[in-house]
Image (cartoon, rainbow, N blue to C red; front, side, top):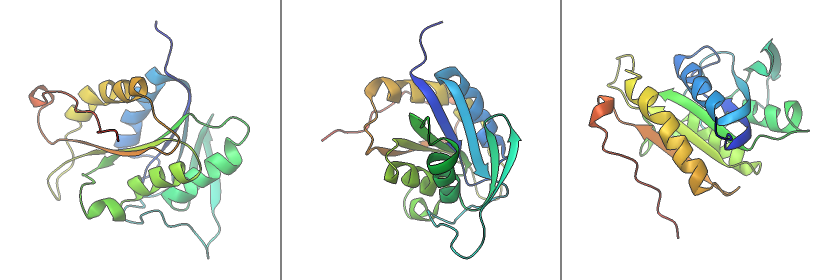
Length: 188
């Protein structure tokens, strides 16, 4: 097998530790890195942007090797991981998601998924938020994410991610076969 593009990946989200999107992302991340850490909210924290807990304690709940449920916000999760749990061996990249629902336009600034990625880049780690578009009040069809996530992340790893990079990737709500390809971000 070819060498993996990352040594260590940190996964976070806003849908919660047991959300299906982070399980899908874990399967992809294991193909991209030697070590995958999950530090995610113990419960759904959608819509909290990159807020941090100031008046409540942030509790760490071990859930297995390199797996932690955090009683706090998505930004708390990334901060605890980078400043405490992984401080001796920092991640090469933070992947946040895969969110249930898109993060496009105004909802991007409210998203805890994007907030976790923003926190990662503020702490010096390139970060990518990933979301699966879906109709409102309907569970997502993960088929497009399942088919395209590894391809997109492999492409981005080859392109290179500077420490100041924070991207938001949205998988469309269409059958995977209808996706025509990957359009790279424009570089200045």
